Length: 163
Image (cartoon, rainbow, N blue to C red; front, side, top):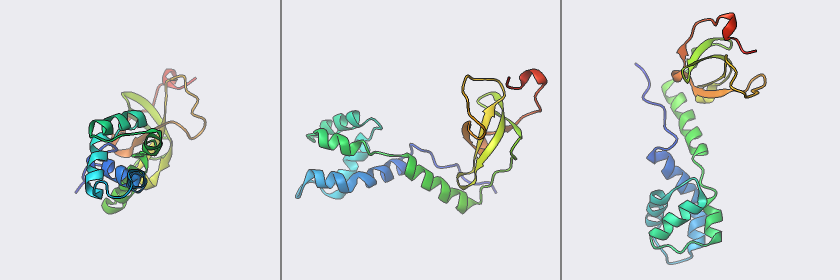
């Protein structure tokens, strides 16, 4: 039996968790006697945007009166942290493991790449493209991808190796 799909960074659950993290500061900004937590959260989720000014403008459409202080609070909107936690829980719950090895050649982004490192807690691989893409990834840097996204590759010919 295979695991269900990996949690998506912009899913409604992740967006909700990111807005819940903002809720205490937003409630403080709103002051006493304003909307209920659930109503405030609903507005935040509907308006959520990674760019704080756009986020505030969308709240303005919900009859809020955003100011610079609110924009600063909204600048803390972060889907990365709740997404990482959700993926880590998913990896544990479903026993997802990396099946590739460092040095393996895989196909990612329609290109051959060599695996250089792992993030086992999120079941992600780090791979460097075999053909130069004008980035210096160092020894262990590169593209970060879910292990399930990597298709087995074949050993490259000499002309396909990075210079």
